[in-house]
Length: 216
Ligand code: URA
Image (tube, rainbow, N blue to C red; front, top):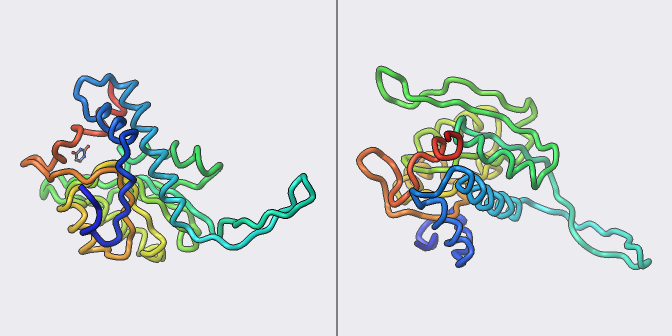
C-alpha cells in the first residue's frame, strides 16, 4: 500500500529487496535467528530513513587533496526511546548508526482490571526536551501504547515535530488513531498492512514481534 493518502507518514521505498526481507520475517516457518537477522536489516533501513529527516547545516571541510568539500553537518542532538519490550529490539540498529546515542525506555502495560494500556515506568535522558527523539516500537497496531509514550515525551517538553515514530509494520487504523492524538509526529514505517484482526494483531502481519525476536 502506498503512503500517499497519509499525511506525515514516510513509507520506505517498496523495493524487491525490502519485500524480500519482509517475506522472510512474515513467514511463520522462519527460525528465530533468521527472524532477528532480517528484522535487524529492516530496522537499520528505518533508522537511516529517520536520520534523513533531521536538519543539517552547511559545513565545509579540508580534504587530503588540498581542496575543500562543501558538505553538511548534523544539527542538534538525538536520542532513542524504546517502548519495552519489543521496542528494545530496535535499540541496536540505532546504536549501529549513531555511536553512543542516549536511549530511554518507557514501559506500558494493560491494566489487569480495565485492560486499558497504562504507563508503568519511564526512564528518559534529562535533556530530552532539547533532542530529536526516535520513538521505537516495531508494530503500530491500535496505536494505544505509542500514544501514551508520545504523551510522556510531550509532557517532558519534546516538541511533536521533533519526534519520529519508527515501526516495521503499521495499518490505517493505527495511523489514524495515532495521528488523531499526535498529528505532528512523523511516522517512519516499512509496510502498511491491510488491518487488524479480532485480537488486534496486524494482518497479514507476522504474529507477536517480541515473542519471535526474543523467545527461542
Ligand atoms: N504487536 C505485535 O507483536 N504484533 C501485532 O500484530 C500487533 C502488535
